[in-house]
Length: 456
Image (tube, rainbow, N blue to C red; front, side, top):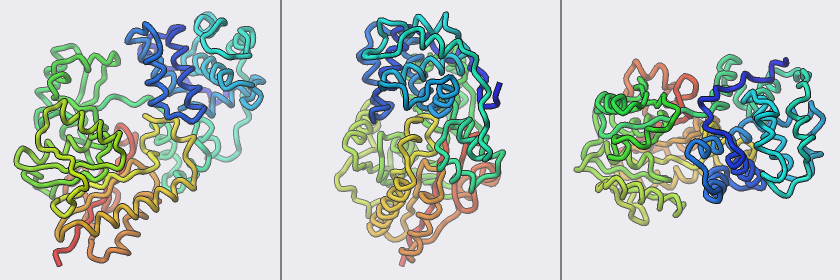
């Protein structure tokens, strides 16, 4: 078998496949192929599905992410079996072929299991592909494929990434690091949480153990835990229901940590979360500033800011305000978690890698620099700006920071390492910047820089 074909995943990690779950996954993938965001497509499909159990919903969610995650390799397999995507008539048919191949290649299943999930009538209409064709897709021997001559192209094919993106990343990393990075972004991400309040991680881990949930500390972030239990029972625990746990990537937690002074805390400070989004870092910052401090949160997306307001309300957090416009000159620290390509978060949003283009990266860069300049002008003397993204690309990270410093001589770049300490800085920092990337750091890839406005 060709080196392209992977080892099937552990069935225990998948949830429970069924005809209804397959239908929800395929319908969500059809919506993705028509341009809808994966998260929204999945939410709609699950809402419209009737009678799905928790494990079926889990399977459907995994399947729809996997169909985007491995899209290029699945299409290569279809071509090898004589069913190139361009010749498959309907979008629904293309989704069905991908689903059958995913169940075969990545789940190790045969037609005896796959057939009941996809046979006519249903699960998706309209469709022109008949059962015998789908059975052939599953049962025909999968031929070895001629491997691309270029090492970059081979990696792009094996891990289902656009070639242009792998070429960009290949210019930054050695081949072993590049392959490890692509492999990490090609996996279903583990669940990571931040423990609240800070410093109570051991207590919360003990409580989770008492409730039968396997969890472990993540050494690189002081309040981070990883859930090793694949059942998702963590969401039913007392720790979760009482607000002691917040879903948050390790890198995202580190960005919030980088907002504090070296060797000190943010207790009593005012922090502006300029691009608050759905409020993950807003909540972390609120815990860090304490009852004597405050967080001012804003975002250009009203929908996402509404989610942040709801999360703040649900947790009864009282030191967060949502003024409009944000009074940036009142803040000691301003976090600019800028809109970006999300290349560091492709494990969670795999559909995005097929929507990104080199032109889009340039457009993000222009937006990021403009935003940073606007915030820099409003920041008071002596304030700290933390510029952050969930991108892996220097065009959105280092180059934006350098471009800003060239236009804003009143700012200096402060190294991140003194905030984290020497032991962690070795794994997390790249020069003056925070740059946690998988698999060295679990979860997604992130970037942050500290920019200090002069007192004069």
